[in-house]
Amino acid sequence: MKLTMNILQLSTVAVHSNYFDVCSLLNIAGDTVKNKMDKRNYTAVTEFFLVGLSHYPGLQMFLYAICLVMYLVILLGNSMLIIISILDPHLHTPMYFFLGNLSFLDICYTSSSIPQMLVTVMSERKSISFIGCALQMILSLGLGCTECILLAVMAFDRYVAICNPLRYTIIMNNGLCIQMAAWTWIIGCLNTLLPSVLALIKPFCGNTIDHLTCEILALLKLICGDISINVLLLTVGSILYLLTPLLLIFFSYVFILSTILRINSSEGRKKAFSTRSAHLTVVILFYGSALFMYIKPKSKDTKIFDEIFGLSYGVITPMLNPIIYSLRNKEVKDAVEKFLLKNLYLKI
Image (cartoon, rainbow, N blue to C red):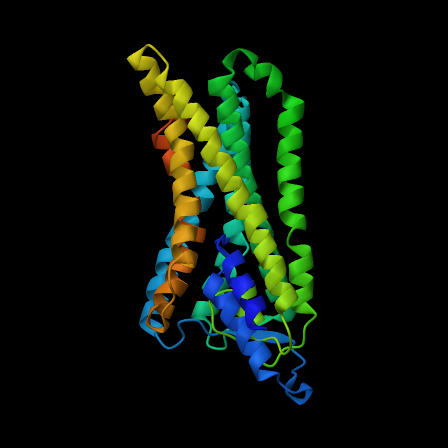
């Protein structure tokens, strides 16, 4: 048993932002095997109680206000990017096609948890139905994996555009872009089915989740019985959906930077760096915050901060995506200005 736990500990270095908490996974598995709770303690769960930060009402109110404002910015900003990329013919390119997918994904991703979290924070009972909790967990896991893959697809698109500019339109044709986007959504969402089902069919010893949302790690802490299979699936998922896309992004940008540095014109190099920096900024924010939060050493005294910042990368990054792509991209800024001027002119 000790050897098995050591192997699991070494294998969980790659961690997904939503559910691959290295220390938590190992602590959950260790505590479950150690306790071996009796079947008499099993509970037929019809609802869960989300009690994260319930002992800090002032902090809950602050979190409610911040998340509400951020969620509104996410809806408005990403919706604007989607509309602009559809209406402006100059933005009918693979880059903006995938950017539109990213904006729609961020809207769905945040909508799967933030509205329910806002309701729960303001509610005295803080309950959520079993089905509602299951749907929230499945959606957040699936959409989180989809975003990991989509960022890698966007990096591949930029690699082809920079390193093979003459063949770009041939390689990144409409058919390939649609297929890549479709398989990104399909693979990302299908990944959640098996670990989610295996977690939900297990018997629970209680229904109080010490978290603000229905996260799979929080649910695993309530399971009575062996969860080694659950831990193994999450470990494999972390490698496939976090580490692998991150490595692909890294190698694509190595080739991209190498190609940019060979450009003779300083103006050309500056323009190339500017257009690529937006995507790279999103990647650093998304993966950097996840890796920082879930690979750093855990401490009992940092639980509250871990819970708050654990939500931050699921809210802040989707909020910053439209801002980054708007401010760092001249084509998007021009399209937004034309769109606003046209609509204001029609109204006047």
